[in-house]
Image (cartoon, rainbow, N blue to C red):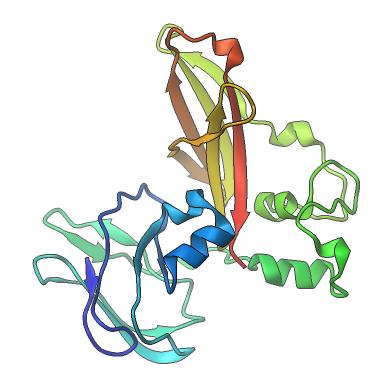
Length: 235
């Protein structure tokens, strides 16, 4: 897939990237700088770097073409236009879906400005104003209030054995109105070295998506396997 040459970008060919429903790709100005700030997990979602130009707040035309030259999306860009568009499988190719604005929530920076208007140390990612064990970044990514004590067990992931005990299933939820929040499951055998693992969506209801990670149980001791959910928010 590519953006054609012209305003706002020079021609931009996107790198091959498989996206599950509800996932997204990123187009960034500087890949190295982005990865240095946000890490390799979010960096794995980069589909390309633009060479020149930028988007104005409105009146910019964005034309996305498929490899065969057919039009996927042709619209005038507006940064407040109904929450954007999704792409759906049209049989022989892709087309844009009808707008589905949903409940677009605040960015992480907007959320911090709302809850911590004075800024400072209290707005730090790991600060826990209500003392419930969840820092600001975690409160934002879960859609909870940093001034209200929450039962952390209510957000615990669910582990089950499946396929006659040959696999473990790790299920977690994420709100769909957290723009820029990236949820990356990771696995480790020693709590020191962590590796990213893929997750897939299994259901979506009331603005909350359920995703799962399925891992085979090999010769290693399953009691020595650890999983965590890393959250990154793009300001």
